[in-house]
Length: 343
Image (cartoon, rainbow, N blue to C red; front, side, top):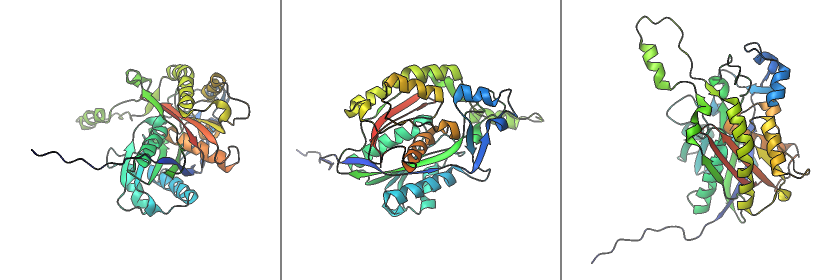
C-alpha cells in the first residue's frame, strides 16, 4: 500500500521588521485657491472641513511607476540593501492607469531587480497596511527574505476637479518600505477587515466597461464622462470617526502594548478632524507625536502612511526604533492596523 509523500515546509517562523523607509512628493504644490477655481468653495472652508492647506500633484508625464521608483530607491538605500536582494515587490495602488500589466513588475525592471515575485494590491487607502501584513507573513514563513512594499498614488488623474465633494481632498505621492528578517518581532499582528455593503461610500463613478458603448455610438458628439473617484463625505467621516479607533485599540492589544508605549501614531491622512477624533478616542498621551501630513500632502491614499512615517523619522519627530501604531482605511470599505518598530 503506497503512501502519499509529505511536503517539505518551514518548521519554525522567523521574525520580520521594516528595515528602511522612503518617500517621494512631487514638486508641484497645489493651493486651495487653485482648487477653488473649479468649485464653489474657499480656502477657509477647505481648511475647516479637512485641514488641508496644500497638496502635491505629479507632472503630466510623471507616472505611478516614476514616483514608486524614487521612494523605493530611498528605502533601499536606508535599509542598506542592493536591489538584487529583493525577493518580492508589493505595490499598493488604485491609480495605476493600466488594468494589466501591474505596476510592480515594471517597477522591478526600473530598479534592476531580476525575476522577483511582483504584484499590485488594490485596497485603496488601507493598501499599504495590507501589504505590510502580507510582507510580514512572507518573511516570517520563509517565502522571501526581503520584500519591497510600496504605496503610491497619482490621484490627480482620477479626480473630478469640478466635484465639490472630492476635488480638494486628493494628492499624489509615494512611500516605500523594505521588510526583512529580524532577530526580534518588528511587526505586530494585523487587525483588518472590510464592509463590502458600503462599497458606494467611496467609488469609481463609472466602470471602465461603461465607456465602451458610449465610445462606439455612431455619430456621438458629446463628451464622455471620465470615471473619476467620488465619495460620500459624511458617510465616510462618521464611519472613520466611530469605527477606526476601536480597530486601532485592538491592534495595540494584539501587539501587547498600550498607548503609553508608542513612539508615534501614524493614521491614514484622510482628514484632520478624523485624526483629532481618533487621538481623543485613543486617549493618546501628550508625548506621542501624531502624523498630520494631510495639511500639506492632501489624501494620498495608499501612500499616506509611509510618506508620513518617513517624514516624521527624517525630521526627528518620531524616534528611530520606537513603536508606531499605523492604520489605513478607505474605499471598500476596507481597513487595516498594526504596531510596527520604526526603522
